[in-house]
Image 1 (cartoon, helix red, strand yellow):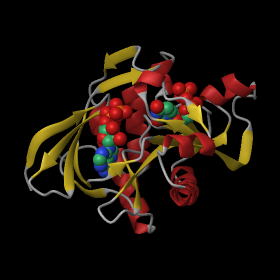
Image 2: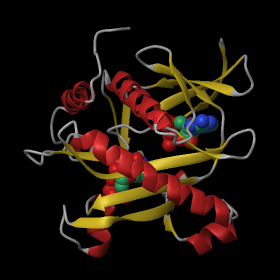
Image 3: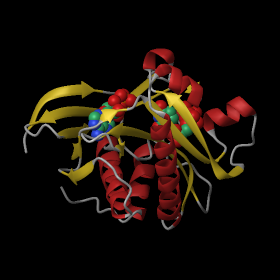
Length: 240
Ligand code: ADP
Ligand code: UDP
């Protein structure tokens, strides 16, 4: 299958059409952005690590029967995915308080919140991805009520699977963001990426952040931390 024209270039990935209408070709970039793109840097190796980690996680979720867009890893920085009609929402699942939730509610960072808190954000850079509720989603027509129910159920199943996956790697899954789309038959599937760019992961022993917070707050060696996550998940760094 061949990649054809560039369909979209986002902050972290380039998405290409292919000669098959149902599939897309994705390239992970080394760019890092935070705070709505206000902080930006090139971090060599980040694209490879996010592609590898995301491919490994989506393959695992596929094995567990969670419908998703992943087809195959093509190279260290590329993968093939099923094309979806993206739903313009970011679904955040939180097991512990961190980031914007701590700021908004004044909770203590790290506070356990089991059962997990689910939040919806509108994916709209111009509006700064605002936090919204199900009534707002209805008014915006972003997704139907039964689709929200399905996305919530899938997000909770992902959470259960990912908590265990990361726990076995000595990592605490603090929170993460998911995106969903509709496949050609209208079925809701998990899409986009799951990586240390989109999850907060803390070392279970030391409590150190091993995720994008290292970039957000200039906390040290981001690529080293992502490499640690990849190898603890069983990834092999040297194949091409
Ligand atoms: P952003 O748009 O946030 O800057 P990226 O750089 O990660 O994000 O770009 C990837 C784009 O591809 C995002 O807009 C994402 O919603 C979209 N996307 C992810 N998975 C799929 C899919 N299976 N089908 C179509 N589009 C997808
Ligand atoms: N997140 C993301 N993309 C976004 C916003 C958030 O991947 O556009 C992830 C983020 O990495 C974290 C979780 O969603 O794992 C919750 O993020 P939060 O609302 O705390 O926002 P932040 O303070 O990280 O901007």
